[in-house]
Image (tube, rainbow, N blue to C red):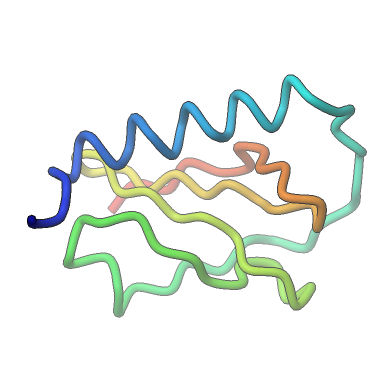
Length: 86
């Protein structure tokens, strides 16, 4: 029993994000500029890191030469905030 493929995990994460977004309102918040943490990107696997220094882990997904940063509002709802070319 191994780990699912990277693409399967991305589909699962995105499905969960859509489900979470559809089950509650997205609150508007003011965030500072996102800070990309480059030391974990080489693995091409989604990872969590605090992008906006609010103490809540945000989701980073690398797809081709773009990193997608989804900010966590603290209730488990992630909103796409930034696309960073690498």
